[in-house]
Length: 184
Image 1 (cartoon, rainbow, N blue to C red):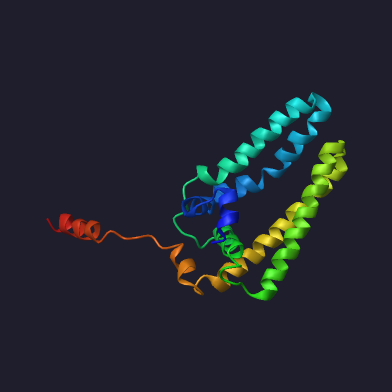
Image 2: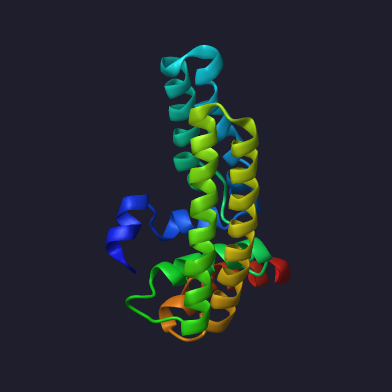
C-alpha cells in the first residue's frame, strides 16, 4: 500500500474491511450536508459554535469506518467501491489501467471542486452555492465510486494482495468438530 496516504487516513486492513460495510459507506456518504451545515451555522451561532459543530462532524467522519462490522461478503457495489478505492490508492506500487486512473483523477477533481464550492458557500453564508457544491460533489463522488468498482473488478485477481483482501480463514478443526458432534 501507499503507506504515507494510509497512515494519514489512519486506515489499516481491518478498518478498510469495516468501511466496506453498507452502513459505513452510506452513512458517511450522507454526512456531507452535515459538514456544510456545521460550517454554515456560523451565520446563526457564531464561529466558535460552528467550529464545535464542524469538529463533531470531522470526528464522526473519522470514527465512521471504524464503527460498523465488516460485511459478510464483499460482492456488493459499495464494498467493491471501497476495495477499488484501496486498489487505486495503491496505484504507485501496483499500477491500475491508465484509462480508469485518468477517469478517477478527473472525477476526484470534480468532486473536490464541488466540495470547495460548497464549503465556500457555507463560509460565505450562500445556501445556493452550498447546495450547488453539494450536488456537484455527490455527482462526482458517485461517478468516482463507479470507476472504483470497475478498477476493483479489473484488478481483484491481478495481484495476490488484492485477492487476499476478501478471504476469510476457515478453521478446519471447527468443521470436523461440527461433523463429529452431529454424528455423536
